[in-house]
Image 1 (tube, one colour):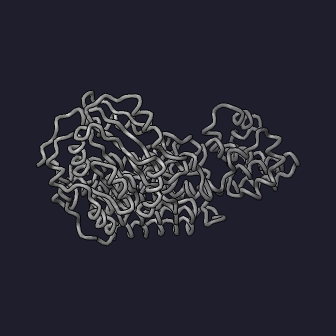
Image 2: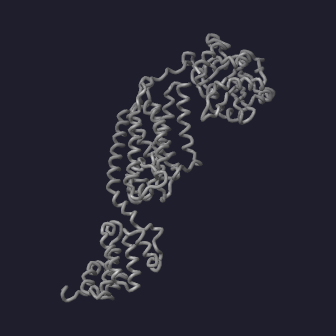
Length: 561
């Protein structure tokens, strides 16, 4: 687009000396748009007819957008009106399409704005005349609009409803209401100092960590993975997946951090990895490694917090998406640090291509699961707030944002949180791994009859669950097969780790009571009473106590006394 800017100068209608000598509001507005909105005076050769029909013509082009602003100065030329026909204006716009960029292969439109400016009342005849200067259809790549500014009453009219609303509450309205700035103040702001291009080591390190953790999911899963290298839900729970019930009700707060490192499948990891590379190459180079690390923590925590607030108790949430959306939002805000125009707009468009679709609730699924929209939104909000604070306090002469001590503190806090959460996952892993051996709660029998009827299936599918053997022993007792019942009960009692960590003591006492009963049926009364002693000493009421007393299992023999 620099070639286009070179050609802008060829078609200037007015030079800066002429513009500065004017006292009209149109001339003042032109200087404001040049100083604060990145417009240049003049236009490209294809739009020379627009320049001839205007008193002042301004152009803004940044490689993506192309806007031509035609100003009619009715203070200097009271009787002047814009003379080109709407059809001619649209034809000129079509010839300028090549100066506008593309987003996802979609051509961006050319914008032509016609503004008639002066201290005259807005009359109906002028409204009717300018109404025709509009877009032909919603599919047209030339967007034409017309405006009338009455500087005496500070009134703005436009045939564009949206544009009119924004003008009445935006830049044009402020220019008309506020005192004029001095010419010395109407110069483009001094460009901020941008740091030399840094290699994003931290971005690549994070990517390596995420890949390593995913390998751990596959190697140390508590159940086989499936499909697109998809770890099961029990694996994600055991390794620290985020779940509202486990965090809020069981106090497992370490999951707020650990869940960020996990991914649901290889596609999930690849998508997040690509997004991380895109934003890392922008943001880490822009704010430096300290603030990049701090922003990762901010995005991760705000994403996890919103996920807990919006998801039901049954959802297991994993992934670095919240943290990455926080980086994208912070990068977009901080990109306003870059020089306006061709240096800034392509960067912002590349960020928005990822950020906007990720915040649309309609896109609720990816391969292998549901997108956690709450985490995306929370991360983006956290990143936006942090980015605004950095940008607002960022000296133009500094290559990195202020508050580096705060950034370092946040980075260290994030490292400590990661270490603590990793240790907590390691400590809880064995307990959650045992859960995979148990009968799922939704498959438990509802009656004793159902438990006995399905006992063989339970033992086959869940041999590590003591309840499977309890159900099977009950069925064998009904079949008068005390020997087989004894074998099942001893198998259940031998699995002491599961029995003592996953269940209340009542289950062990039930197994002991049934085993003692089976031994009685085999004629081994002394052994039966000795076996029953733990239950006799601990159970004082309920159906187990009734059984113990009925069978005389708590009555010590002479030898035991």
